Image (cartoon, rainbow, N blue to C red; front, side, top):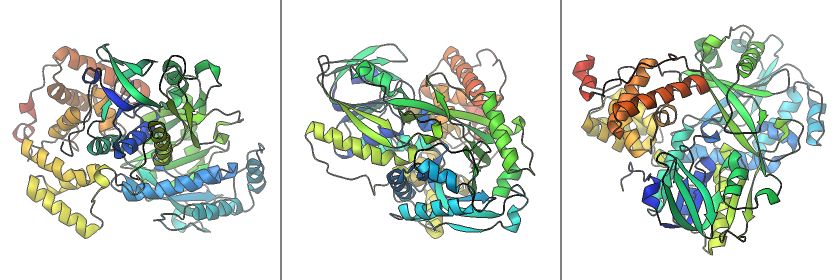
Length: 593
């Protein structure tokens, strides 16, 4: 199996197979367990009723962080774990996870001291903006808790720099600066973890659009959500990693179900992506971390060539019925106007919205922000109808997925009576392995890539940023098949999209457009680009004209309705079949890159 052949299978290929562990839910936590168990040579199957990482795992703030604000709730162990895991991700996935300089604007000296103390002791204080002393104390503790595996500087506090006086509101007198991290493409890291897992244990397999509909004895019944076909597999253990759907999945699996109190609750977090060059330039690569007048902590930072703003925190009952409401868009834009009064913001600046449901442990807290982001592993023993144990993952946050997966894996290994043989702590992820460490090594890598593949230098740099060290074999593959840029989205090529379709488990067009590429979140999907991508996907996946049109309509609807993308309300009738000759360099009137 080559580094680029990820073993995604359809349910029909799983019929009557046995796995030591079946993992339900292919978000970051489930995939983390999949990778860790496969590293121990445990044969695993991971399934998801939708696409890989299509739930909350594709909708974070794209921050890899320790959770500075959790200190007020006394969550010291969580912050210590999260800062350590942040530091490990900076080492293990440096192609996707990068340091993020963060600035906190401060207007008062003593503000928030009493509020922070009341929160620490579990009381609900009146809202008041945190001042310099409260933030300084929090950051000192944040540095201390994050000292393990540290790769970034400690915090500092100073008078507001001259360059920032016109950026923040006039009342800002100081700025605190510290470092966290951000991830460019979380969905891709999920796919890399799956690929690493199946490299380590070739008997492991992954299937998306595959729903578990029952469990009896040691038999799990799976339904292919594309064809409706039912298949059965057997297992020795089950891991329930379905996040905000945990309680529903537990009931389907014949777990404790209604006999216990619900274990999870969801709060939705909506985010905006803006095309706002003035704000992006003024931030100078930093994230601004600040409080709105209602006390909600918000963030804004340069994301690729855009600006990412987040987030709301609203309790929800049904994780399948969520969206970014107009009032949430208005709220976030109003917060920006409050913090950056010299800049103008409007709905026309918004090129993309997204929302996810945080799977939090059930809590009676008064406000969503007070609910712990900690995680736990619970065990449901066999019962009258089910012969195998269920290991459930409760809560958690993106940054700490490896630690939660390690805890869950240890429980699975105990149930299987097998020892742990390896650790994921220092294990590089995907293209993070053997990545060039400095500018000179990077240039040598680029030169080898250009010489061995024939792609241009600019294209080689793009592939390196996108895929890390795995860019080398991919560039060779693309160069051999002709790396022709898309006419309407030239940062990707037809050959690259064909690769993504064929070898990363793409089933629907929105899998490709929204999760396998960064085109949608950057606001680069136009009607013409979407039609072009649909044609390439149809050619790669064997769709006829009717299926191509259906996928085009469905993806356009998802982009318009769930992500606020300005596309035509009605896509034209079924387009003619894709003609690859139309994307040759000669047809496009441009040289091959």
